[in-house]
Image (cartoon, rainbow, N blue to C red):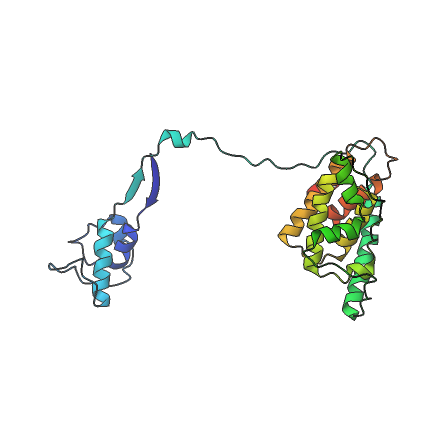
Length: 279
């Protein structure tokens, strides 16, 4: 048996029922409390179905309703409902790095200093309102496929074709655009948030590449703080993905290791996601 609530009967009695001992039986504890309102006793011809026409009649209705409430109300709960299994959300944990794959604390501090200086430079340019013109025409903020081609050329599509084992002849490789500051500064924050989300999805589909590492770094440098909850979720996902990829690298000489460490460090240290930091 589970107690759902304790009714406000005693409260009502304390406030307005001190003069109605004939209608409501008061406890010793209630007698010791000061009376807040003086209300006349409920008349013998009181009809609870009628709408109150005055403040006094309204208080009579309150007293009448309070008098009908039980002090404690209980309900029987089926034991089957109590035994029903509970769905637990498993906390995502960052993959552990092999020994010697993580940067030292001193190296992380140097990375943060360089990254912070870059963000200060970007803020200075924005404040001056002398943003350089983009050297290329930029797609709309919702043109996902066009942005994919801009960032990676046709390499992304070629990788998808290769994964699909399609025997058709493939076009020649076209390189993607470098993440120049003149490009990034001409993308609004909403566009940067979309880019961050798309890059997180592309990372999960095809894995890590040096080109994508450069774009991640540039996007994070231009994201304004505080981040939206969605963007914070995306950078955490990216950091966990980078940590998982790092854990599979064959050696410390792998060319992707330094970029992966930089991204994890920025997300954890600069954007205050300390649970993802390399210790």
